Length: 137
Image (cartoon, rainbow, N blue to C red):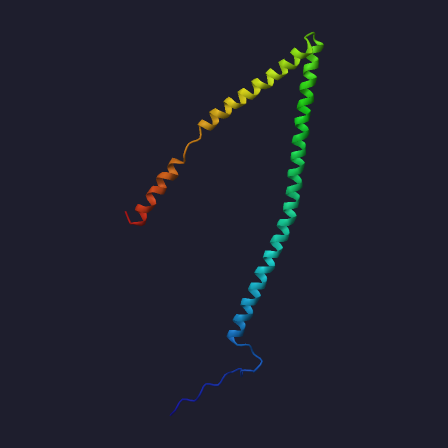
């Protein structure tokens, strides 16, 4: 006895999508989703960059005003020294020498810190071991 052909429980309708059509639709939808996500990220970054740029500009302005304040403080200190009885040119020279001493101390500390910088010896040693590990040693 010959086996009877298996009948589909749901007949195939001409309007039903094929697997190929579904794959094309999914690929198109994923591509659209990814491009929209990229557009959203770009928009968010533009807003963040605007706020970041404004913040940096405000920090720069604050730094500039702080430098002006230090200059004014230096002049005031020189005039206070003059008020204490020393000639004005000597008072300004004392303030200048003080700042020169502070700069020299900062440079000295900076040089000592830079001399403490070392190469990443452990990372270099591990990097040299990679070829041996790849060869199975």
